[in-house]
Image (cartoon, rainbow, N blue to C red; front, side, top):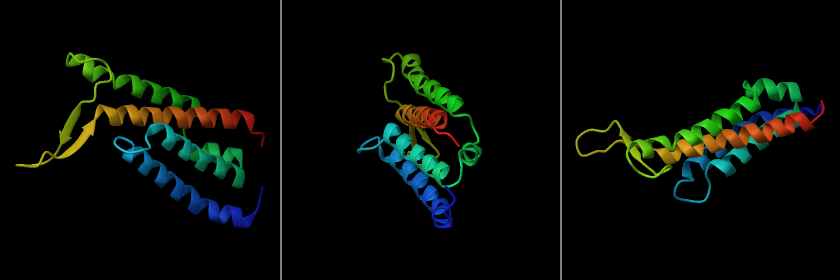
Length: 138
């Protein structure tokens, strides 16, 4: 499809959709959202980009093979089980590490839950885009 209006607005929309997907990923620990829905939202941005421009342009914008992306995401999700096991807890136990911070301030909390959610985000994004890129004909 070569609509100038669609192509022009797609550049802005894709950026906003990807930003919203990161927001949904980050708020998913304690509120509705998380890696799965954020991955679906991000894949919708790339599907929109492919429909407005072309399949080749969307693949180039992704910069990584969707299958590799899904595999990396699955490995990250599995890796989130290891810290709990190393500490003697059940796998996938939520553990927190506080980065930075001074006296009285714990710093920025990073958790194994975030690692799991990022892994799910990448796995869903890669799987959906691999399916779309396979089905869609240029």
